[in-house]
Image (spheres, rainbow, N blue to C red):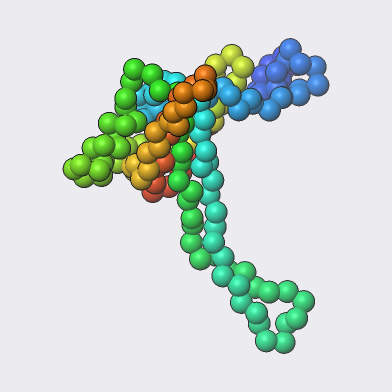
Length: 160
């Protein structure tokens, strides 16, 4: 017969927390990988969004609701923003796409817990640059110079 500690372990309950409470993960603990290589210094990620488009149909004689049918899946572009440093990886990727051909890469966004353990992974398949934004430069400002790249992709896979 298993003891209480073994049962809690099997149920994946943190035994150091007597009520089994799990706090939500914090949004600033993440990393970005492009083709399994960590891209350093990414400070913001946007576009973790999927939408199922629908088509409505009003059936004759049915006045209390409208039918809604799924049409297709719509993915938002993924936007990576970071302070400019010595690495010019984002610019080089975009530059190659403009000059030669589109170079598709898999991009993963990994959310971590407070001790750095991977908790969620969103993999954007077949991503390629569609927009690059250089920093705004102002002589009277002392803010970080940020660049961003917008990526189209062929779909998202979420895993734990």
